[in-house]
Image (cartoon, rainbow, N blue to C red):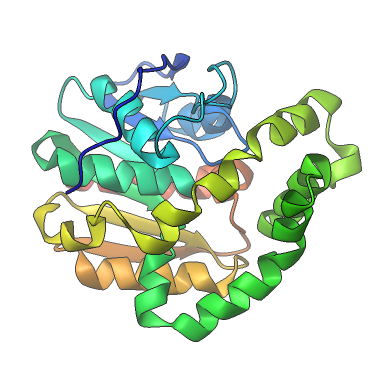
Amino acid sequence: MKDLEPAVPQPLFVRSFGQGPRPVLAIHCTIAHSGAWRGLARELDQQVTMTTPDMLSHGRSPDWDGQGDYQDRMVAATAPLITEKLDLIGHSFGATVALRLAADQPHMIRSLTLIEPVLFAVAAQDDPALLDAHEEDAKPFTEALAAGDQELGARLFNRMWSNGIGPRWPDLPEPTRAAMVRGIPVVPQCRHAIYDDPAGVLGQLDGITAPVQLLRGSLTHPIIGVVNEGLRRRLPDARSDVVEGAGHMLPISHPMETARYLSALLERTA
């Protein structure tokens, strides 16, 4: 595995949900924040105590200083939160951070849940034509950011991954829109990590011996199905399931259904 880029550590804002006996670390998706886990934590309240950091340039954490690789920086910033053996959850880009944490510290992970992981390096190996189709779908968003229109970029990115579930951009509260615009410059900075896997995590998957639950929504982009199935085949102990009627944002839109899978995993790993 490559060394993390040297940079001055930036502190993350961290909040906690629940009062159950199982410690959980949950890492949110881009242009969201730690509060995105509130609904899921409520469903699991008596089972878990959930620690949820805000990523850099998100929520109440400081803006990323632009030094090093963003995924490297998030791995370095969240690793100190693993102080005991715990259950690890990640959503979207947060799932790629969680996967690297599990590969780095497999002995500290009781279980791993990856919700809609955007590790497109899997699709690059398993279905490059579908990856090309995803690139075409993402072109309006990438072109908006290339033109310097961050608000339009955030709006198009949100539309692409919301799958028509949830409020439209004009119906979102202004602070929510502003938070998405703030976080959107991070997205293209994550491209190298999720498309090219420079950390070599795909070569370390056989070291993750904890049970892994992969989840996706039935309405999400087909590329997520390729990623989930590819990870399932590569991990020693993994299962892949689909939440019917959900899209990419399933831990927010479908917390009850998501919690059912988490509860079953917690019971299996008691």
